Amino acid sequence: MQELLIYAILFLLLIGHTLLAGKMYRKVHEDERLSFHEKNDWKLKALIFPAFFWFQYKKLNR
Image (cartoon, rainbow, N blue to C red; front, side, top):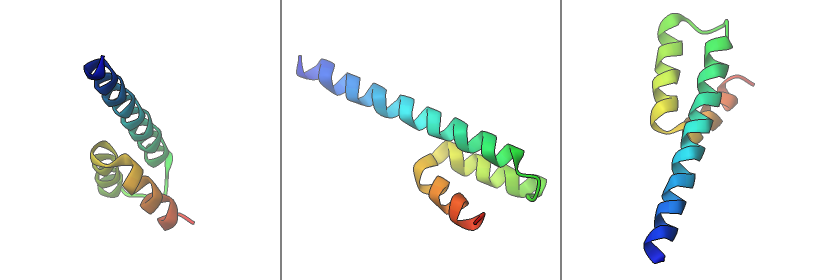
């Protein structure tokens, strides 16, 4: 039972990571102010640590 709980938590973390990375990926792709290379840099960061870099990206674009 404990193993099932651990797997459920890991699954929820993976789904949250995927959804946040996808959201950031779309926002970066729509941003016309960024160059091609800047977009690629932000997209790569979105795939690695989406929560951390989402707040940095938002702070940069205010």
